[in-house]
Amino acid sequence: MNIDEIIRNSLLENKFIYGVFTTPRNKGENPYKKIVARPLIMKSGNIIQFEKLTDTKAFHNNLNFEDALREILELIKNEYKNINIFTLDADYQLLISKKGSIKVIEKEPTKELNIENHNKKKQYIINENEPCEFLTLLGVMNQKGQVYAKKYDKFKQINKFLEIVDDSLKDIKINDDFMIIDFGCGKAYLTFALYYYFNEIKKVNVKIIGLDLKDDVINFCNETAEMLKFNNLKFQYGDIKNFNYKSKIDMIVTLHACDNATDAALVKAIKWNTDIILSVPCCQHEFYDKIDNKSLEPMLKHGLIRERISSLVTDSLRGLFLETKGYKVQLLEFISLEHTPKNILIRAIKINKDKDKALKQYDEFKKIWNLQDIFIEEYYNSLK
Ligand SMILES: C[S@@+](CC[C@H](N)C(=O)[O-])C[C@H]1O[C@@H](n2cnc3c(N)ncnc32)[C@H](O)[C@@H]1O
Image (tube, rainbow, N blue to C red; front, side, top):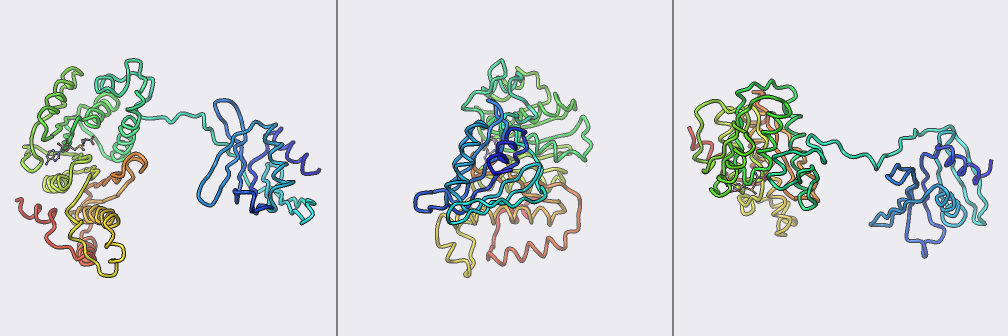
């Protein structure tokens, strides 16, 4: 079989896995150092996608099988010197001589066909086109369940948060009196989502209090909770530092609470022996002026880099601090960076693990960054 037949048959019989084209014959005219062709399932039907890579960018071109066949043969015959084609029947390496003659080396197939379905909708915990009253009242979707374009990121954030909650609780028994506090709840999209997740999806009657410094927001949230008949969801005006609760608190959530309000929330949670902490820190300023490391001065002298590093050092230190108090800590990506730079979620689960290693690491870490008089420590020590 010649190469035309090999490509044509593999496309017609759905045996084409992918093709890689490298080393352009005419570098001056061809901006793409590499092209990868692979089948994809799209809404419009099955296509071959050509991913064309320059030094810095990737461009995509989708073609039907007939046009793809023409394009692939053009790439082989006129454009590239190194070509590998993978099909279900065989792997083919194409050697192109200077004069353009093609030698085909056939080997046993090594790849499996796994066509990406770009038509498949992601399954969320709360789905689009399924009306959800609290999301309608909060202006995220209309009554038919269609998500408003400008609220789509919020919709995805809510679902990502619920996925993390779901994963965090998979080994934990949740009883009806499970108590959650959401510190710095704001307009409370995520607090309502949390309540909906437990009470409507999991069918456990948890209690949630959302706390915030803005009384207009608190009034709005309480009115909304009443309208929804979310009877065990209450909102309170107040500062995290002054908040106290008489009974056990099982879970603390604090999402984008400003600056060291996050630290105050973490300290409260530790003091109360809270089992689960989910925290997405927000802006933080404390370490910007405090971190100091002579070897890293070439980085730290740039304000932008100092800001990013100080934020990462803060979250690492928060994680270590929780470990010194017996928590198992993971830092997870909350939502992709393209939506918000504040995308690290600290998940801490109380397991009373051995604290010695964490204490040592914590002290060493502080020394590396020459950190003293840290708010989280001082606030912790100031509370009984
Ligand atoms: C950026 S909003 C985040 C709202 C919500 N958690 C979210 O993620 O969509 C931060 C909220 O934290 C509240 N906040 C900041 N410091 C606080 C404190 N010390 N006590 C209570 N609430 C606080 C602010 O009033 C604000 O509503």
